[in-house]
Amino acid sequence: ARCGNVAATVVPLSAPWGFFGYLENGKIQQRFSVFLLIVPEVNNPPEPTDPTVTLQTGPHLWYYTRIFDTKVDEQETEERVIQLLKDLEQDNRPFNSTFFGVAYFTTHGLMEIGFMKTG
Image (tube, rainbow, N blue to C red; front, side):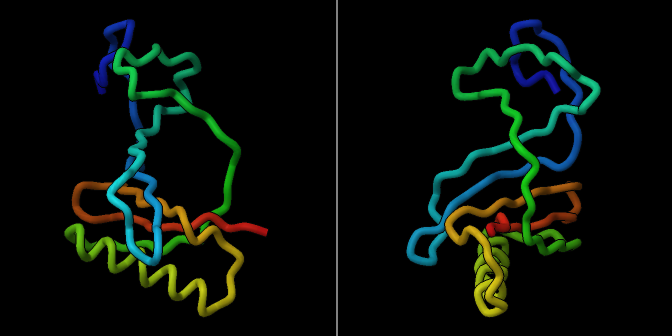
């Protein structure tokens, strides 16, 4: 993808792409962080030209996830996030109930929803 970078080059991306969101009082807030994955073969990606875009790496984290293979709209995605939250609470799983991730693997609906495992 071109994604605007100082080298004006194409940077190869990989699935998944998606967003991180957060819940407040059981409701999804309308503020998200979008992510794209650069393929691991790119050791030194060029800096983005957009000041709102950052390159980040982080530690390996464990998530409780649920995978779906049907395309859904925004409301159905929200329902799936809330249902996974309720199921993890019911199972007494140790997880961060404030932040969640939604990752897409195809444009045809293959996606996963997850909450970060704690403890």
